[in-house]
Amino acid sequence: MLKIDFTEKAIDDVYQQFMGHPSGLTKKKLHVVYLKALGLSHKEIERIARTSADSVTRYLKDYDEGGLAALGVSRTHRP
Image (cartoon, rainbow, N blue to C red; front, top):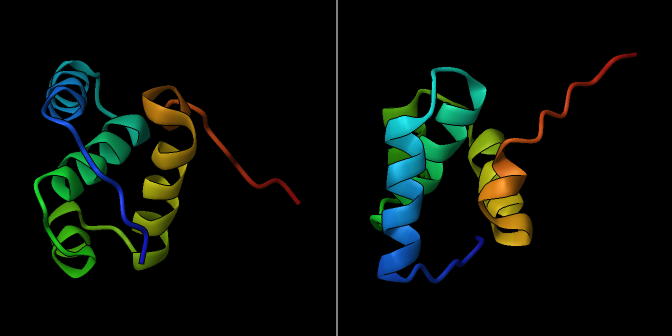
């Protein structure tokens, strides 16, 4: 399981972005990261954010590797 240490400033930044962002996938990603910053388990986040375990892991990994900017990047698969 991915372990991210959130500072109080990082939690505030994620919260501000989450609350101010228009709806959509980026807002969902911000919601997942914010819930993790509050200390919720992946299972709790899946239930609250209504997303899959893979998505929770992917969003958190994106945040860990690229910060808030990485959450705005859309990765769509086109065969």
